Image 1 (tube, rainbow, N blue to C red):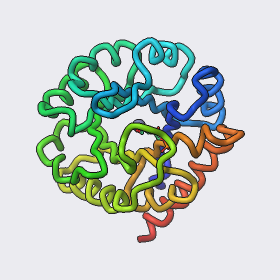
Image 2 (tube, rainbow, N blue to C red):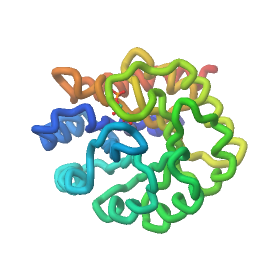
Image 3 (cartoon, rainbow, N blue to C red):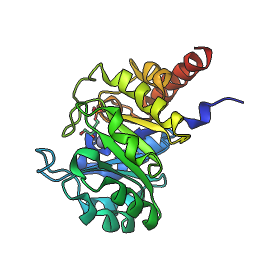
Image 4 (cartoon, protein in one colour):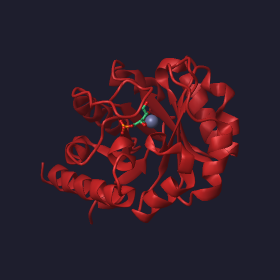
Length: 231
Ligand code: DX5
Ligand code: ZN
């Protein structure tokens, strides 16, 4: 009866201690994380370089939850096959990095993974209109991509609403994910706006107890679901 099972918590491994990634994965799985969010940066689409295939393969060996790969790279089409082969269950590409977005999404689906589009804070929801038939989730960036630990950009809240409305109008129940500056203080509000996948880095791995932080984030998110149902 409740929509609560649609909420998924996706800890972002970017904010973990890279010297003990296995422990980090286990800790959030202890906290009932639904997904593990893997931020791949190429030093071109975004200034930083982060996680590549060898680390992805290592994560795949230890993780029991599905791996959600966020490709912050130019020419994402060059990497889709290898990341799916390395264990990605979900792959998102940036609209801003992909002139052939629809083709990329179709490729991800054909490879057997869920196909996501990520959009930057400066990108309007309307860019999704041409790909509503090809998208399995939309990742709304609520910080400028490139680093963990940045503050939430407030207009992202209405962006979540706009994306949810656009998908609903197209008859696509694909979930909206939100990524950047998410924590217990704003989880309920983003869920009330229509987000179902909450990506969180610092608010989980920046605490002494990532398992407890994962559970707490879910509790706060579920409070937002109640608000959404009563709206
Ligand atoms: C930013 C990444 C995020 C980041 C989130 O470019 O896409 O996934 O790790 O980190 P927090 O939750 O600390 O903003
Ligand atoms: Zn991310």
